[in-house]
Length: 256
Image (cartoon, rainbow, N blue to C red):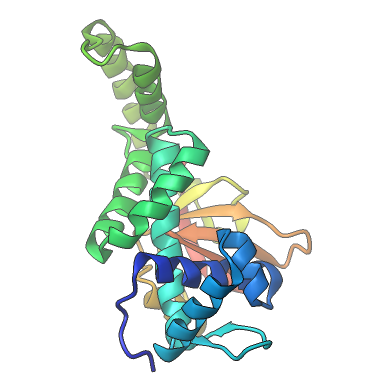
């Protein structure tokens, strides 16, 4: 068991690097970490010893490095913070991806759990609420690019409100349309939906409950692997892979 969760920003970076390398290559060695973080081997060795002493990794010189259960939990949490910040900067604030990545790396260490969850909920709200949605975010981008900071485009408000009311009316007409309900496995990459029901006991139900996913959570299909026997999803900032039989147990309301 880990001695405590408190790590410096630098050690969190090492833990996150190990987490991502394991996802990419399965096996992790010191040289892989040095290359990813652009640091020298002696710095890596020192960091690995500290992480091992704290119970976050299994480490021995010249052997592969693995995460402990506690190390995996903390690394996933750090990665989730990073991805949530980066997605917010890129998809909501329209910040350049390179800059968004750099700033997310610096801010992730100070982000509390409650702020992380609230940030993810905000992004879900912006993307799905009839009063906002993708068009609303695009208009914000146009505002940033075309409107000087010291002016407000009041002349566009009437048009915007009219369009918003039309969109809300159209979306309201779909609320009772049963055709909008389907199984998660039926969604295509890029499609999003709201979870209505998770069937069964144990398995997928327990897995989702562990990360706080329940009816009402917003879920997105990111990709479908070539084999076609699973789907990659994003929910509450987590990136998961579900088997087709697991996806068939989740009923969603599809956002159009």
